[in-house]
Image (cartoon, rainbow, N blue to C red):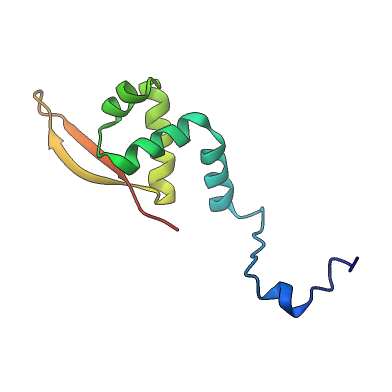
Length: 102
């Protein structure tokens, strides 16, 4: 068996990329994806454009937790505000959708 630091050329061409675990964005994405509620919210937003309240109703996740995850996803650029409409009480209602990412 070869030592770890002696990678052959054929293995280097495979395209494996080692990411630093100190990267804050990578850590945040990992924390989001390890959470059942975060994954559920993201899955819903890949197929629909919804308000935080609609997401909470559709998933059964508390509105407070939905807002927490939405804010994290906005910071990471995973989710965007697709549109803003006025409610019957003239409050802004933000509709969210997932950004396509590789």
